[in-house]
Amino acid sequence: MANTTISNITYTNLCKSSTNTVYLYGHLVPGIALFIFGLTFNPIALYYFATSRNFRRSPYSYYFSAIAVVDLVRLTVWCLFFLLDFKIFKLQFHSFECPTQMYTEFVAGSISAWLTVSLTFERCLVIYKPLQTLTDTKGRRALIIIFCVILASCIVNSLLLQPGFYVKR
Image (cartoon, rainbow, N blue to C red; front, side, top):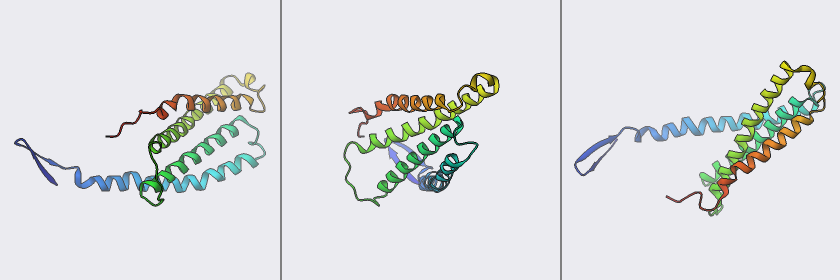
């Protein structure tokens, strides 16, 4: 514990000793575990969605495949910058490292979340309006929604790429 005195005020920092432990077991270990599971099971899921006879051309297959691909991209970006943070890769980045990382992670995260919402909404439509959803047997609506979600997420998060958005402290 570090004691600090600033103009006759003394305080003790109780969090200082546990910060590294929390970072290790609360961020790094779960992140590495998620990376390993995601890198293992997302390609297996993609293979199943592509080869399943009953599931292949359904709108759900498109949604789940898009979510799996976006999650793979997000995990890959996370791993790349994780390795860069620990100086495993010796690369020189300048002012675009932080905005690029934040943009790709935010875009991938929002695409994944909104595709899950779209999938849920599609399922509600099938349950409450089954006759109206029978006309879309090839999943065109799902493909249009996936494209719109990706485009909207890229546009909304483009603010993160603005010069001067991140200020050095």
